[in-house]
Image 1 (tube, rainbow, N blue to C red):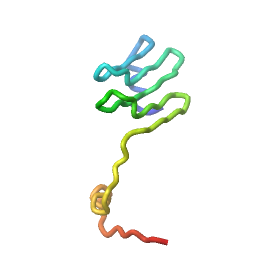
Image 2 (image 1 turned 90 degrees about the vertical axis):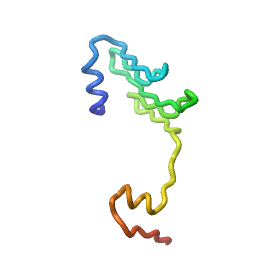
Image 3 (image 1 turned 180 degrees about the vertical axis):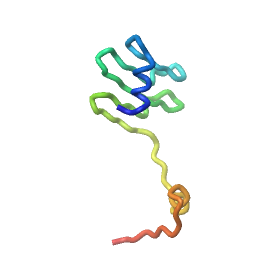
Length: 84
């Protein structure tokens, strides 16, 4: 369980725990410890869900990076692409 989830669990005394953002249920946990977390896009569609049973469904948009952007993010220079 992540540190955030541990902090959330310890912050609440009553179950179920329900957290909302923009009228969307983003986190739920029951008294037995089952939980799920969701992320939504600007159209209020679920794009990521994870639960305590190990389910992860990730439909978040993937970003493509240039070599320069990768170098900047990693703080290194001189990345070269080697084709086999």
